[in-house]
Length: 416
Image 1: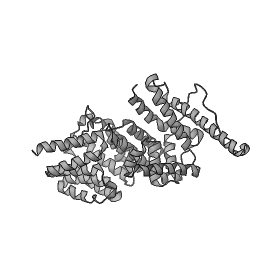
Image 2: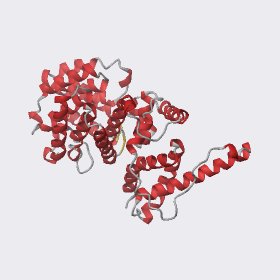
Image 3: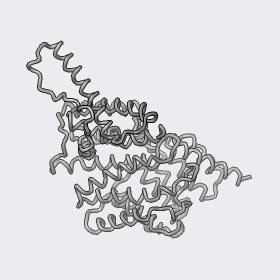
Image 4: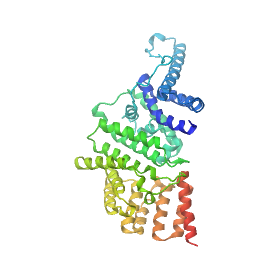
């Protein structure tokens, strides 16, 4: 197994191992340190020695032993310093026995997700901590998703860990009355984890399928827990309908293929059918929410046999509703494209004008990329080429950068 394949497997297993150790030993912060050591050991050993038969159990065992060693060391230090061993609370420091199979431990990732969304944390801290612990994203990736400096995000995550510890949070699913309070943050986290997997913010690959699969898996668990919640169903449908296009989004060389140019025969029709059923049923019986609207938009795209068959009028209506109930700059970006498809490129550019003064998108490559696309539609090739080049400079995703540079180059050739 290659180092890259091992890395993908470890990224998938990390939140499950963290959840298991947190449940077993109760300390989220200490468990996270132990998991990082176990992951490092696996990344060093597995490529050469091979992946163990039960990789999850192996990681839990190694992490558990590291954690126990750390707790014993800390306990001994405290006893030496305080000379008050009798006053210390009992601690379970039993490490797994040699060969002990921990694979039977249940997957507690959903419980970990709710723990990270503890009400003692601010919404922004809930999301950031969960992206780190459950999504496995780096601090830099989370900072980019939030459009804030990396140092700011590092401080936020550190404070969130300390707040959870000080709050005495227990590793268990919250009671019913508390779930609703945390649910909004949980859904937002899953949405961001899925998006990071579907379009990676940095690096050589456009997609990280392990992240999208993990987000969908947790989404299914959450739907089983709360089957009547419209937004839970809407988010699951959105992820399914979006992930259904994954195989058609990249060429054989990993290059980006935009939606309008994708071979729709490669789309996963089973996921599309499942997503359409979910969103159709929930729209009929629950209160409308932003994830349901986004899922409905995805369904309109997925049900079009060809790009030119897309019902853009319906998409514009859905985006108008979405912008009304959940306005944000990314919604406006997508809305501008839909408006351009119905009312012409200048109308779409007019929608973008409202974003020029939005600090959240200052310097973000997507604003330049959308503007370039609409300028190209309008026939202003010189301005479009300049915007494509600006977008290419600003993105940290290698496939997106190559795509944007190729668009600018083709426009240069066309203008000669």
